[in-house]
Structure formats: C-alpha cells, structure tokens
Length: 317
Image (cartoon, rainbow, N blue to C red; front, top):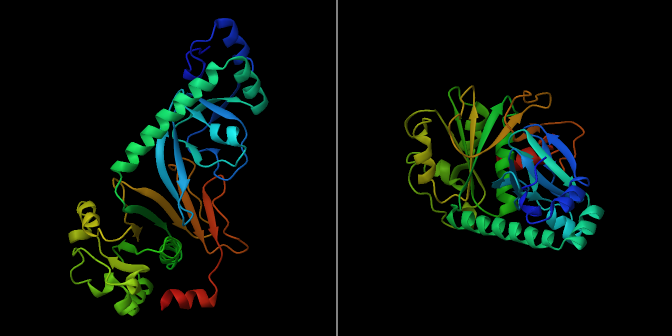
C-alpha cells in the first residue's frame, strides 16, 4: 500500500488507514480520457502511477496542450471546490492508475484533517507556477500537424477557415503531398490577392507580414516535399513563416510527418477509424451524415457534417 502521496503527508498511520479505505482505485489505458472539459465534476483524482497530459480548448474549440502530470498530482480539484464544470481535458499518456476520492468523502476527511487542504493548496500553487513558466517561454505561433488518411479534399481547408474565423487571425494551411491535389491547387490559384501564400508563392520563405485586415483569414499553400518543404527543412521553414499565428501542416498522398513536433490531428472520411495502438490525439471525420459537430467524443473523434452548397462556395471564393 502506498502511503507517501503528497496530499496525505504528515498524517498518522491510523488516519491514513481511514483515508485509504475511502479511495477507489481505477485504471485507464493509454490514450483514454480521464476527465473531459465541460463535464460535471465527479471527484478528486490522485495519480498513483503513470502519467497524463492536460489540454484546454482555445477560442476556436481546438485542444491546446498545457502540461504533463505524474504520480502524486491531483485532478479535478478546482471543480470539486467551485462546483463548476471541468475546465480541462485530461488524457492518459501511459497506462494510468488513479485513486478517486468522491466529493462527500473528500469534504468529510478534509474537515477532520485540515492538512489535506494545505497540501492541496501547495500542489495547486506548484502547478500554477509551472504553467506560468511554460506560458512565458512559449512561442505565440501554434503549429498543428494534420495526418490526412483519405479525408475529403476540402476538410483541412475548412478546418483552417474555422480557426481563422473563430480566432480572428491569419491561418496558413500548408499541404505537403507528392501527388498533389488538383482541387486544392485549383482553390489556391483562385484565391488570388486575398492569400499572402499565393501572392508570394515565388518566395515562400519570405517573412509574411499581413498588409491589412483583408489579409486575415485562411491562406492555402500546396507544396511538394522538396527544397524548403522537405521534412528535414520543414522546422526552419515554419520558423520563417512567423507572421502566422496558426499554421496547419497537412501531410497527404502517403507523406508522413513522423519526427516533427507539434499537436497532431488525424483527418479521415466518415468510415475511417484509427487503429487500437494509434497514439492519443483528435480525429476529425468529414463529411459525416447526421452529425451535429458539437465537440470531440470521449475517444477524441469529431464528426463534421457535409458542407452546404453555400459553405463550399464560401470556401472557394
């Protein structure tokens, strides 16, 4: 029996016995959702073994990685205190063993042993400090890697347009494919002066500075995996495209972005599903009949309904 969890440090053995009798052990496999942002709070989760990753949805509704947590960390405590819904999504990064203290038991034990409140406050303070340090050191640019598994051609660009509209900023969709996509290349050609990427395709490594409000939106740049867009050159290329707040890099036609760092999203058709041993991540399926596209389900799958004719026309103009 483990008795060294930071939350219960300093308590007498007989008190620990009482506390351990109230804890419910639970195991989550790698990739499983432990807590889902927006859900109702269910108790205090204490990590006993393994690690988990914390994500928070941005203004566009897409998950942003915050930090990892490991043994001794607590989850769900803010919702437990405030009664509000869970403020972040937690996924098991490895097989994860947790101990759950349900709300009534927590409040009863914390009233008996005030040290629990003090320890919990210290844990929260350390987490806040670490989050602030990461925030200070983080670049403002967000890079998301899109793994295209036979998705409809316009799905990636629809995602870029959604991010641009919700965040009110400029977003670049860089589509890297050996075979190319006539539909996307045709779309890029018709964007004309509205798209910085198209206007300056002859010098794609130039630092792209928007000239005015008309330059904000979703910009599209199809490219072959060579020269500045070869996988080994891509990290430097993305650095040079520094005027974009968000860059989506879509790998299509059998090209893989393995080895590149960034948040990963899988794109697929309605019937596609990731394999059981696939790494954790969001999967977007388009175009799924009957979907209402609220948010990803507990498996991290978001089903996008078919585009209306007006939506397709809007994307192409």
